[in-house]
Amino acid sequence: MNNSINPDQALREQLSGSADERKLALQQIFRSNDLRTMTFSYILKHGGKEEDCRDVFQEVFLLFERAVREKKFEGKSSVSTFFIGIVKWHWINTLRKRGAYTALDDRTDFMDTSDSVEASVIDEEKRKLLHSVIGQMNERCRQLLRLWGLSMSPEEIAKEAGLAGPDMAKKETYRCRAKLKEFFDARPHLMEALKN
Amino acid sequence: MEIQDTIDAYVRGHLDPAEKADFEAAFQNDPDLVKAVEQARLDFNIANVLIEDEVRGWMQEWETETPAPQKTIPPARTGWKWLGGAVLILFVGGAVWFINRPDSGAGDDSFHTPPKIVPPTTRPIDPNRPVVQQETTTPTTAPVKPELPVTNPRYIAMAEKEFTAIESDSYMRSTDPGQPKNTLQQAAEFIRKKDYSDASNLLRALSATDPDYISAQILLGEVYFRQKKFAAAEQAYTRALRSDKVSDDAVEWNLLMSYLAQYAVKKGDFDLLLNKIAADPDHPDYKQALELQKTIKK
Picture 1 (cartoon, each protein chain N blue to C red):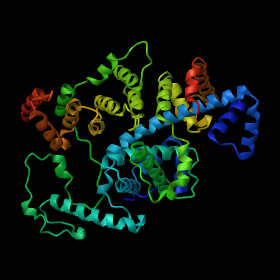
Picture 2: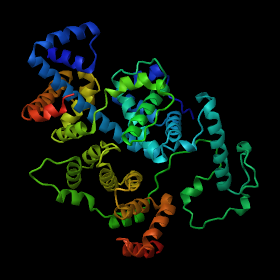
Picture 3: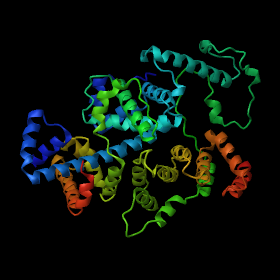
Picture 4: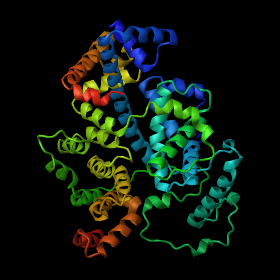
């Protein structure tokens, strides 16, 4: 069985393709033996325990997914190099939070990666607040906003959400965002707390 | 709508440098535009959290199907530094295979395992060994396959009957109607309404550094159990047990039920944990464990 991941260009195309293509590409990356082995080895070699490995891999996978989606992975390095760069950055931050950080000798390996990923991290407090807002949204609006967040065109959103056409998709998405605006207008303190 | 498209493109970072500079110059003196940009940023952050929740859900599914990397052989192209590890993994994997191989003698000597380590004739044959495990000992050089879901209605019924659904109820009781609900309380409310999908989306979003992470894992275990995703429930309870912030007693019983629901493949783990609880008269589930020992033998 070939466990190697796609050539990078093809992978990026898949990730920005249809919902099914994107899910398949992500699954392939998630199940890549290479990435898992590299991640687990790095964590174990740098003071981590076995139980850290899976958590770090999953958190890094999420950061990687977002970085690719936001075009922050430009293909200057291979997928595995970019991924392990995030692993290193994430693990140093984890050690710092635990008060156990000691300078690692290969920091320069991931300087570029960390610059592109750091801005994407939503801190825990804000994430909780955002979830409380999401809890107020109906399932339809959650779906439409998720698809909009994936940069899908109105045509693609209409197809994925089973709407009559792109105009309807645009209108419905706009309506959901207008509801969110109303929600925040009524809660200026929440808006303030969530500002970047 | 055109200005909204430009705002969205700006927030997503899709404007080219010249467009970006023009746009930023425009909104310097336009408070309404500044507010619209802030709102678009929030919309985008909410969309990102929704996407992340969806991906977390997929990861939970894929994780149960993905073998641990220690059982796999990294391809040679990963470089020389992996070669030592690969040789070690091959050696250990070969030894494990050799110990578990059938007595046919149709072994594969590519692992170079010295036969003297475990002579095939010394391997004890467990008469209670589940059929599924016997099937997986077929000699093969293929990569380790994901565990097949093996269910038995009798054990699932027993597990569901004995499962203790205390966590969501206790979170609901702690909800003060005058206060905004936190993530755990929102999730507990979803569980009460049997909206397990929304509950798991919320719970999975809490990262391992969150103070509520352990409680979230316990609730997540309950969600998965009710969805009959027993392997995922087992993982969630195991993650909760790794912490010293929670009493093992409170989690062990439901972990035991997760093993019971997968009895054919988790008999060993089930027996170990059941015996542990049944040997501890101070354990809150001691009597239940003794009863279960009798029932399971029937």
